[in-house]
Amino acid sequence: MLDLGGVTIHQSCLDRAAQEDLVAQLRDVAREAPLFRPETARGRKMSVRMTSAGAVGWTSDRKGYRYEPRHPSGGAWPAIPLALLDLWRAVAECGTPLDTCLVNFYGEGARMGLHQDRDEASTEYPVVSLSLGDQALFRVGGLERGGPTRSVWLASGDVAVLGGPGRMVYHGIDRIRFGSSDLLPGGGRINVTMRVATAVSGSSAR
Ligand code: MD3
Ligand code: FE
Image (cartoon, rainbow, N blue to C red; front, side):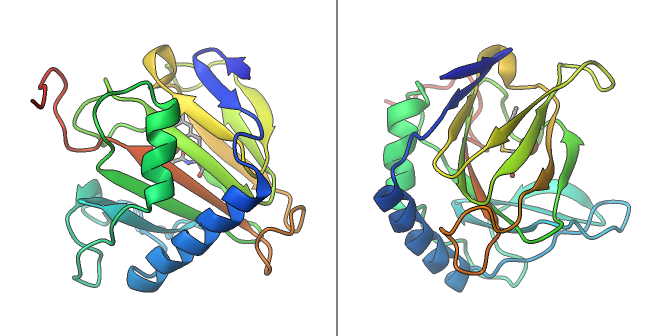
């Protein structure tokens, strides 16, 4: 376990068989809800391709970043794969179930700039991230843009838990080592983030 100032990384959390199982389940998600390249509010296409599963999914276009109940094509998002519900229960330390998972696909040259995750209704819930496939250089900063950052390589099967003080830190992916893993036949990297996007903190289901 690695602790980067509130960001906890469980290295090799999933073995190869579990990783292969998840890739198969995520292929099913992408078949129902095809990967797309979101456009930022400034009109630039992101280099990462994305899709989601769950009651809502993350999208972005000229109107900005948000969670939507439908894929841009108009259909509902697929159900969240069971293995991800299990993973959340095992590591999130959160009694509220996730309502969305965002699937990010990084092909050769894809990256994600430093940002905070602030589109969820409450920041009280953690975010759990699973890396699959090629290694990625993950950069973590603090609560303000422009502060010092640290970098760590994320490998296939690594799980990061972003909760408490780590929930609002700036973070991004500088680059991937394309072809460094043989999990995905064509190369590339998948990152899945599990989230509670719509629940409001303090509300307790009974
Ligand atoms: C730290 N994804 O989807 S995962 C994202 O590898 C995102 O695709 C990256 O940033 C990726 O928003 C990084 C690690 C991660 C995910 C969520 C976080 C780190 C985080 C939320 C808060 C703080
Ligand atoms: Fe993020």
